[in-house]
Image (cartoon, rainbow over all chains, first blue to last red; front, side, top):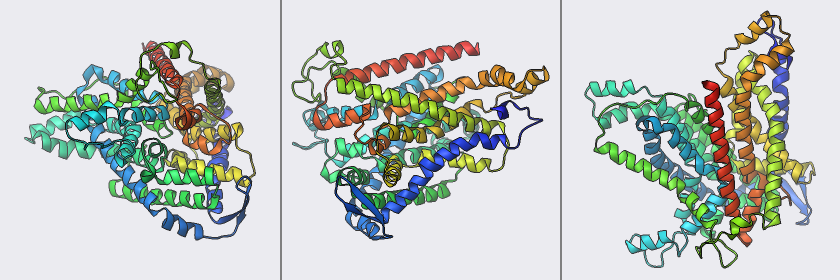
Length: 291
Length: 285
């Protein structure tokens, strides 16, 4: 702690390193090394019983071939669901964030508080609530059936749309907040200037607001997409066997089947695809102030 | 809240104290449509919450509290009817407190070093701290599990705490850093020019400046730990935390007490949030 108190004139050279060391060592052991053990496990083979499996490193990459051939559907499904959910989040979050930033006036803080409030309830319990809302004998299904939007005997629960809806709901907050932050930073005089220069509302939106809100769109889509791709709760609670995602497979292979090498290979595949995707996405949209 | 929440929440909350700014002009039709859509989205955010609160008063006939049967107050009269649920909640509170306390030390030290000190490799440390915030939870959980498997470390309470500390450090570091950036640190020099020792300066000047940031970070970290399911699921062994209990209940039986406790937690956080805002207002004025 001495380093904190030392004045700027007589700053110790090693103090900052002593301060960052504990956290870096901790994250090194419990965040970085796990990824190496994950890679190692993915190239191992299992022996022993289901109750006491043993791992032997064998540099066998057959697990990767299996990951792609066996679980191709789940991989494609995960990325499709997460992609659709991200777009839905963006479409719903934008009007709300826009109204909070520009139209809410003195109610701004109140509305922001209201937006955050639902997320004080455990994510699992919120998903259970959606199970009730979308149930076959629920009012949503009967209302949609009555106006003819849902065929007779049609259901919402256990469909792809229920899973996508759940993913959208659970991560929309991570779209709303970054969007709000980037919209809030826009100087309203820029919008007035564009109108003074005879641009229409639509044009002002397209040429001023949208480009300036891009950092929020970028951060928000990543904050929604990444956790949504790996999620298995929504598919588990709201979906069926036809809607399983890659997270469900990883979870099952690790904790139920205990086929560690296979599960580890799948996790590696998921992580690499996400990393490459994030790199391409940020390359395309720019990386300024991501966090 | 899931793990990615923190950064976004922190930045948004930091903006709150700014004066409202509104684009002038007469509201037009498009404006009203926009407001209407925003109101609908807000309603959508609250729909499950209404259901959760409503169903805490339900009197379910079977094992599952999924469809409305009738109004009753008996769930609220007996919120701790299921000892396993209460124990799971207690364990979660314990894990949240212990892991937050540990992560607070690591995270705060890093944050202060990043804001206060100039050193080689600062940008690299910055980037490194962000990575855990963007890793998918299922992969983080799986990776940690393989570490414990390779070490033949039996999963349980200790591994849950270790995992929680691992994802909390980054959040705490980011939150504290965001809060203490831009403070007038020459106050420290002033204190020492006036003859205070470095220790005295730390306790009388530095600490009071950074404490609000640390409290905000601790609250966020506590909430994240309490709510974490995915990572915990991988490293818990046979230990059952509150979210794990809820997950097991979905497969076996969902008692309305789950809704009662969820509603209670919501109300308690609301009160804490309101108190926090009041305290901050007082400090400002």
